[in-house]
Image 1 (spheres, one colour):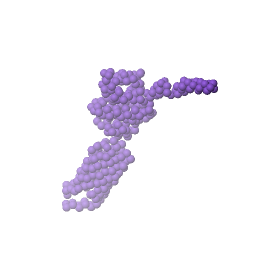
Image 2 (cartoon, helix red, strand yellow):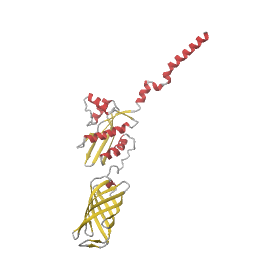
Image 3 (spheres, one colour):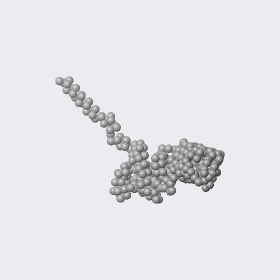
Image 4 (spheres, helix red, strand yellow):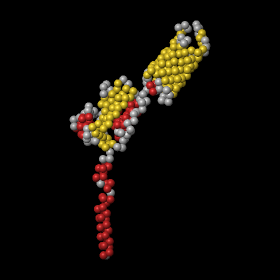
Length: 312
């Protein structure tokens, strides 16, 4: 009986000691360590980008949403939700879609939201060129930590999916201030304005062409052609080598674009055409067109051609 009591007393004491030491043996569960884990990520708020000039606010909202999504994916930051920000700002008398005019306002908003950093900026558009600027502000000190901008002569889709991410990386210091590639967002016919190619058509000819894009909408083309003998009720064109000059106007700046063209040949043919052209970053250039060949001495006839070339 005595041994049993001694054993039970020893066991109870051992159990009490284990329960007493358990919190110390599991520090990861303590409130202090939980707070330390939560502080590993910096609290940041992404304010609405300001739509500058005649830019529609909806476009700035799209870019803001893209910026916020990319920051959320960054493991360094804990990003406030848009709804939570709006609620806090409304309670303090700010607009729900806050876009401050200056750094002092951004700092005030940051303090109300209890974040360490604010990301803000603006978006404008002049002609076909977007200008996106982003800056990161230290809320505690009220200083601008980083500011970056990019000019993009591009579509809204290219701005969103090709320009925002590298610009944000620079802002957050995740690249060594590497400049954005100059070709990103630049229309393909400005990237590769020169073109050489070969073409042939229903008018029984083939030719070699040289082209130069003055800009993304206008190109000048010259060519040397060889044509077979052509018969007409009022005129015969003997076989031989000739020349052609053309002015081509594109309907859009994209890789695939329709165009209108006016060509003139050394045989005095005048040829208006409508066509389509494809040009990509590898230099591949394809085109096809149809129109009407006209010469005052013997009337006109249908004309069609297709070509392949290399752009650089």
